[in-house]
Length: 420
Image 1 (spheres, rainbow, N blue to C red):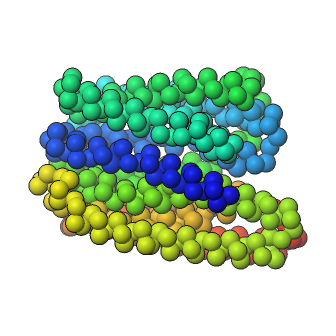
Image 2: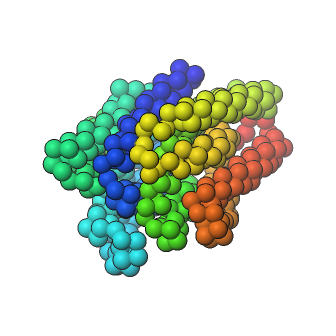
Image 3: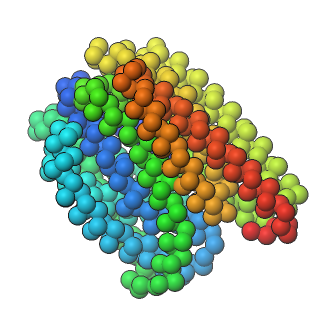
């Protein structure tokens, strides 16, 4: 299990290097307003993604519970569910485009294309999850790293050789996602022997698990992206660019904790399932797991300190002078991402016990807290106000969810030993 964690963490970390390398290139080549507008379009992708991709959220959980044939049927119906959701949100985006484009000064054509880009990404992410669970790391790395590698190469090419400016990255993302979506679709059908059979039982099973996740996923995406929308409204797109640059610097920490969580979640679920099967879950299972969690949190803290020092001394050489504030914003936001790392260390227990509804309640509450904080702090403190709002919100999310984890374990312990 630890070998799998090491491989997945390393690949996830490597996958996030390329977007970071694009930061100094884009900030030097684009104006503040152009970069800010690009960031807003990418923010809407982040907000819409969990809604369109919600049905594949249960793949990791069900892989360890279903037979091979049942999992294949479950995956098929997970992908089928995506189609009507896509049509619905494409209609919503179409009718809301005039208002949103006019309000934030976005490009209408690209705004209307966002759901299509996200649809391409559904099968890519399904392959990432499936091949991670199957421990086929060559295919896992292909679909994890491939889209970002192609996006990086195409962005550079379109920016410097075709002079497409801020649209270079969007053209690159669209082309890359389309290519890997087709490849993913082909390999999933071939390897899992997918037959396009609608199963109401599997649809029902999927929706019972994934529907409660939607408020959690949407609210999480919103409160990580709402600050940019508020900044655009109160301060303009140039300030969005500065804040986004600081956030991108802090994303080094986010990437690290995210790479840990991608490997950590399957490890926790497999660990609990194994201990439950051995009837030792409450004899030593949870105690051992909590020790691992404590060590994981220490790793997150140490990583945050090291990354903060690196950013402080190197960032002035990476970004234009107009982005000088980004250094201090990035260091502050690293603290918030450390707390988010703690949150991701503990919450797989709730996923295993299918307490996704509890996560949704916490995230919705935290999202509302974040909205209020953004409204109060951004007008008063500018881009630093958005930073304060983000850190306070993540701290609340961690504390609330940790309380639920301890409650679930305590209540579970009252039942028969090893029963899930």
